[in-house]
Length: 335
Ligand code: SF4
Image 1 (cartoon, rainbow, N blue to C red):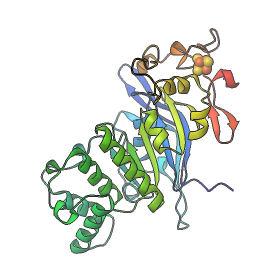
Image 2: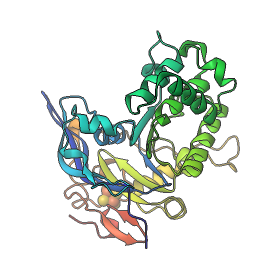
Image 3: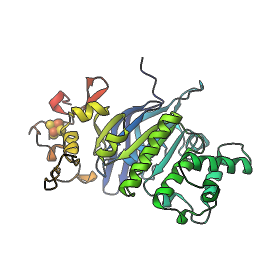
Image 4: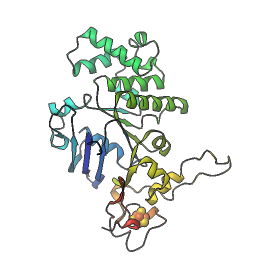
């Protein structure tokens, strides 16, 4: 029997009511996160993947609001599951969950650090917020965390300021800070986009190691199918706030069903490509969220669109078996 997911998102809609209209940033997305596995959420910028993760942590800035759906967090110790959408977004319940159960790291670590405090002070503060360790114990734990994420000379680095560290070390410190309170789910939002290729590979290695060693579940958000190939066990492909295809990574790479997934995969550089061969690019651009096309949101860019059908009806997700779902009329997903 498949393990019960620790986080289940069902039919989530997060909308922004602006002066110019309603932006449906997340518009009916469902997925599960299982213990010890990595879920990759992939799509171009503006597809709603970051709003999706901010919705889970209830840190969507106004005028954004969850208007529908559920986010259920389950615990290992027998506590009753918590429905995160029912919590006040600044209340004590969700604050106890942020960091302690679900932690977030993102692209630019500098934005999450104060420049006026050492990295040690900042990790210690995070530890003491969620535990009853005294200052000395928390410092020892901070040093242990820095060692765990591969920071050399952790006893010295703990007293350095963020600006004294390289981009790769800062990203490792941010991971240490995120893991300091022992969360079960780590959300990594474009964690390697700002890094050079070598450092990128090292950070992905570290995340994989933490998943395997600590049994951590990871949600990785990226625009890069290469990162998905390296990291993910399961994938959600998003386009304009909708999940257009979901399933296990091998099945999706081996036999992508949705025309958008197929186009994303064509745009990955191949190792056999000759230096002169050109990378396939997707026609057109992602539409402005306020000008969402009617019907299937991908139809203006889809080379298999059926006029009179795809530009009229929003396709519903249909199950293809073996944990796969696709929202496209080619597979019977007519609304
Ligand atoms: Fe293309 Fe139509 Fe499928 Fe949308 S529903 S992806 S437009 S074939």
